[in-house]
Length: 153
Figure (cartoon, rainbow, N blue to C red):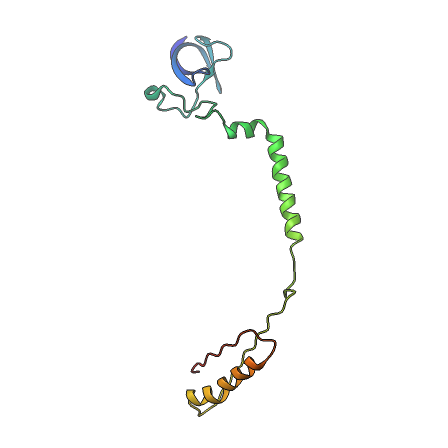
């Protein structure tokens, strides 16, 4: 028989306390405790390296505001799996019913005029082509705006 100490969680205060125990024997994957534990005691087995300093359990089952969403999700696994599957099915149905029109049902009336005049200057091209096409566009009944942008090639 060997004496040892373990950390035990107090569920009322979410704190840990060091408690002396007596170990009867070691078995593969377990330890048989003879004295120092009562049925229902929660023993800290991992993730509490600093328990001696804080005496506050980082392994408590409640968060600071009393709601532990992770614990709730783990205790309601079938509901969480159902919600995940329903979300995936809804996403697949939504994706499969997306519109596939290449062209929208409305018309953009746009006209692009490109004029190459070899040997002419930019000013000559503006005078002969751009100004005349802009005037023609403005006379049109269907156009709402006309813009001309002469550029050097």
